[in-house]
Image: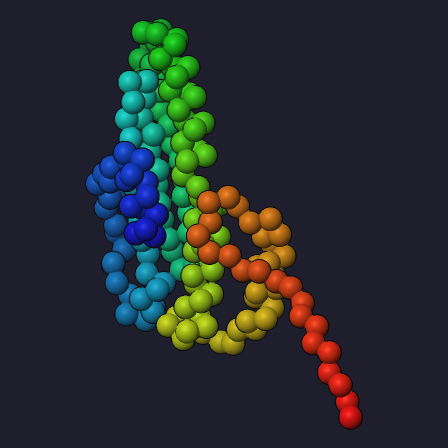
Length: 162
């Protein structure tokens, strides 16, 4: 997640104050990989502001994108419809630039790799073959801009029986 936050910071998003947590930050009964995580990043333009809320709880990663046009904060018409239109176009571009599909694809592959290495403790058993099959079936066409990839295929080796 820190890699993803660093990427968003290259797009000029800045981290803002986190929401206060009413829950304890560390629960000793949970492994470190399952602790909660919350960050909020902001980027401002002439026409408005975009917020990205990142959260991770147990095994679920969420990214929420919020945009607020400055003219919506007052009852007066916007100073310039052109500025409002440019902000709207920028919001559309940001949706493409945040690469959330690529990030989640890579995140899942890294998690599977950690399981294989034994660096990620799981409760119960895991059918790794079934997990990989379902992952490849779900991502038949992986997203653009991925860093990792799982490939499938068949190998036939002729065997002579004497």
